Image (tube, rainbow over all chains, first blue to last red; front, side):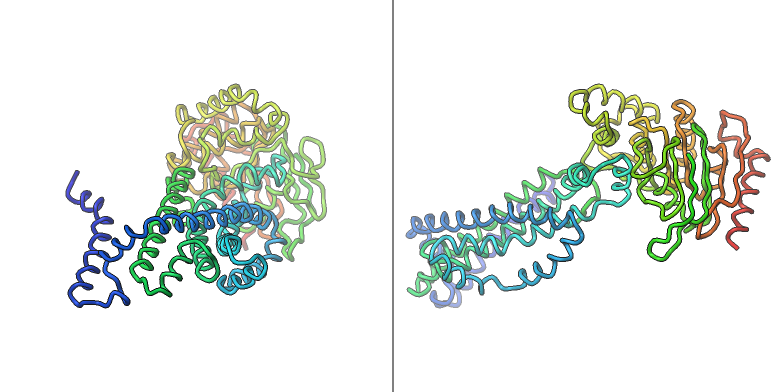
Length: 258
Length: 253
């Protein structure tokens, strides 16, 4: 291993560790009030003391996120295919979708709570509502941007619209789709935590708001760290899936940067 | 193939008008003309992708009323599917055209052999398992020719297939096309900007006028076959190209 590549390999860990060391040092040197900003050592202590509720609530958040995300994937793929199929539907639905997407989803949570009560369902639905849009847009884009000449080649052979979608559209939309998943999972996570913070009785968001009202700041931050770890894990999982499933798109210049 | 066409006035632009073009079975016809003269419209009309607003188009004696399935097409861009291997790209038409479509799954091995033989003909022996991005532009264009020919079309429509290639690769591919045509014997309509390409490959070169496009001159190329690339430097050939050039200059005025 050359020194350069060693540095490159270890850089992510070194920087993360360095950040925590810097944080600890600032807290110790300036005697920062732990109610304002607890030191990493205090956070670790809180994590060890409260590992059981932390784990349970992390599990709850993971479940609502994944459930909402799963609905978003199913719904997003179907809607994306419908929108990508026909220009008329695309034009008709586009303003509605943009309007819907521009509503901050926090504003929807109280409505969901009125409809479904406090609990998991509003969290799942918020995760779904916030995360389906990028999937729809990406699937539709992949389908709609098939090269017209390629379509001519196939149509000249007597291919029907369905043939073109199956042979060209869907494979072509795959890199867009898998690319959208890692965006969507992060958004779904945001959605479920927002909903848990406002109205829930489980989940990391709920744990943090309860700990916050009790001034247990180290526990609040332990919750934050737990969220970061879950978020990174899910992003990494979908980035990995994306790379494995659509290797051709990374090798060819196709969809570069998309 | 007979194209008699009075005019298409879709979207306010009349692309071609009063266009008369007749190509015998098994002949090699080239269509040259200034840019924007409706050559691509001609391609789409002949393959049934666009319905004429007036006039009659017949391929193999039958009027064209929808996409003609006996045609193969290749364009300036190879348009290969990046997720398919070269072989699977070539096989794509067979997954669509009857009767192959029905037989495709069960006889995959037989068809794969057919694709491999065709690839060998254009000099792509041993590249069947590769992916398009691993091939040069010229090799991709050869693959595109194979894809246009795999279902044994009676008519091959080429829309400037070699325009994006460098001069040497282009001449190489002229020979590939010449040999394929001599061997398989399909009808070719080649749309091109390149007069040397038209004169070297075709039996007859048709000159189109500026928009609205129609055929203003047809010139038979009676150079003996098989033609070698050296023919391009003979005075007779140079005269033909010169003559075609002056006719195009006339119509551009």
